[in-house]
Structures are given as C-alpha cells and as structure tokens.
Length: 500
Image 1 (cartoon, rainbow, N blue to C red):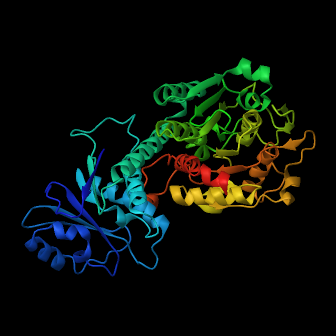
Image 2 (cartoon, helix red, strand yellow):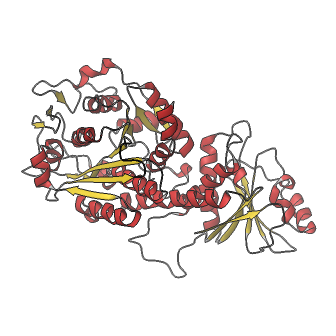
Image 3 (cartoon, one colour):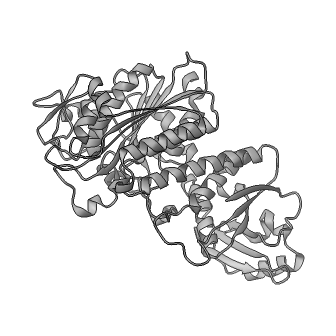
C-alpha cells in the first residue's frame, strides 16, 4: 500500500481518489474539509442526497458525483457524546475494509477524523497509517488467488492542514502497521509449518535485515544451563525446543536495557491432559507473544530508537507422547526453583520461568513478558483488551498509558499477596496449576511473579483474550498481532518511565 501526504489548503484534484468523509450523527457533509474540493454542482448534489443518512457508527453510504464522477464515501461515527479512543482506533480499519469491498483502489482521508481531539495531527496521521495497513491485511498464504487478484486499497492520501513532519509520522505508522501484519502472518501459519526452529530462523532473518544480534540455544545448550522448564514442556514433541535471544543496541553499552519476553508455543495440544477438539483449533497462535516480541525488536531496530533492548523467546511445542511430562512430575527451572506439574496444559508459565531467570543477567531496567497464558483472560475481558499485572504500581500505570497510546488496550488486575497461597506446591516449591477454580488469570501472573521478584520493574501481559479478533474490531479472521504496538510504544516512551 502506498501512503502520501496532501495539503487541505488547496483542492485535491485527483478525480480517481475516492473521498472518505466521516461524520457524527449531528454533522453535515458541508462542514467536512474535503467538501470544498468538490465542484459547486457536486457539493449541492451531495448536500441534498445525504440529508436522510443517519451516520450510525461504522455505517457507510457511497455516492458518485454527477459532475466529476468522483466517489464519495460517507462514514458514520455515531454519537459525538459516546465517541472514545476505542472507536477511533477501529474506524480507519473499518474504512479500509469497506473500501476493499467496494473496489476502491485509492482513497483520501483526513487523519483528524480518526482520533481524539487531545492528540496532535502528526500522532493522528501515524495511527491512521498503521491502522490502514492493519485493516488491509488478510491471511491468504494458502488460498488460490482469484481471477483479477485480491481486492485491495493500493494508495491512501492523507489530507492534512500542516505538511511539516507529516511524511515522517506516516512513514513511522506504516512501518508499525507492516510489522504488526508480519506478526499476524507468523501467528496465522499452521503449526506444521511454524515449528520452533522455523520461528528461530525467522528471527535470524530479521536480525540480518534490521541489524540486531540473534543467538539461538538448542536442546543441548539449554540442558547445560539447566533450563528444565522449557525442556520439560517440550519433552513430548519431536520438534526441538529453541531459546531465541535478540539483542539490539541503540544506546550506550552501560545503559541498562529493557527486556521483552514472549511465549513461543508453536502448537499447544495441551500435552497429556489434551485439550477438547474445538479448543485446539487456534493453538498454532499460542506463539503470538513470541511473535510480537520478534516484531517489536525488529521495529525498534528499524526505527533506530536510542535504547538497548533484549528480546527473549522460549519456543517449543506442547505435545502428548510417551516422553511427555506428566501431571505430578517435578521440573527444576534455571532459577533452581522446582515446579510441580499440576496440569500439562498450564505449560506457558513453566516455559517462561527460564526466560525470566535468564533475563537477570542483563540487569534490566524493565522486564515485560507477553503471553497467551490463560483461557480465563477471555472470560474476564471478552476480546476487547489484554490484561496487565505488576507488583509495582508505577510500572502498571506506565503500561496502561502505553496501551492507550498504542491502540493495544490493557486492563489492570491485582497481584496481591493473598493469591500467593494458590500456587504453593505440595511436592515442589510451586505448582503450575491452582487447586481452586477462581482467579485463573491472576494465578498465572502470581506464578510468574515468583520468578520475577529480582526485577525493579516487571509487568506480565496476558494476551489470550486478544490473540484473535472479533468482527467489530475490523480485523480479518485469525491473529491480531496484539502486543506488538504495545511493546514498541514502551520502547518509545521508556525515557519518561525512567525519569518519572
């Protein structure tokens, strides 16, 4: 998709570009900035023809101007009183999807239409470009292309009041949107085509492309180090586990880095306590956290952000076989702590223990793990937000702010000491599965906290609820790329966190 900045200070002459005019329910098209670019007779026609249009949220109405032949797409923003950041986040994606269905290959949008008034025009433009890319994505890798090709919006023109800085903002948004789509592509690839070694190969390829260092540990190296968590989870699979280390240096060597950790279960059958068939359909996406870390590090490096950042992705399959770890087994992690396996399908937290401990050697200023950890997260939030937990309130508030700014919405859950008793083991230091049914997402976070207590700032983000989308989020079927924009925003705003 091409992206271009155009000035609203003069009429937009390109007649092949369809005008997109978002309006609130009490708005009229005559007040929209693009309205003045129409010929006088077309303005008169549109004012009359659109009088009965209701402008309900996400609705659209298409008109072809009788004089110029230009297409105008009116887009509904609903009630102005109910307008919020979540609606603003989705509108650009909805516009792109509608334009594709209507076979509009070139459109003109005004970024100020798609954001809150509190944001500057350049921020709005960046978000528009990112969401245009995200809205355009579909997973077609294994589908035969139809005659005439896939419908696509090939170019978006952004009408702005001030040109200065807008091209840079749109270029940044485009990069972010493209990386999110690459993460979605990774997560959408079936488990038989995306093994731990293939995920590691992808990280290596991106390291060469964007200039960051990638090191991968195989089974023997992990055994030498004592990474019993990763090896225990992967013991039932014929696919060798991989521990992917990505290192980006954009600041002085002495500057303490951020560490991002992503769960990389490339397929999760549940292990010996196997999942029901319908619960297994999306489990090739159980590496979404790992994919988001790879995507974030790649973006941070391509934008050359002035920070040091480490990405750790423990990658494995969780499969049933005669060599699988069993309920009741005890595994010894890199930290020296032992874990009693209460349930083989609570594998993600076991896998992450070794990555959390490995992160200690970097003396990080901030550690964030991102994981499709608990089905309970979807029970709590539906598909509309990921859940964040941190023992440091400053860290939690920083994460919430980054979520709001990036578009990867977060909601905070408590990590109180009261929940610690739920993960106390009988035959080991801790158990990976509580004996109580309640508070499943918090219990997952509390388990991980046992391996994160040495960090001055740590947050756990459970993305199980947002791993795949809903129709009203205006994302194509499959993976959402959630966590990618969040981690990029964390890196961009890291200076404010450290200095606050």
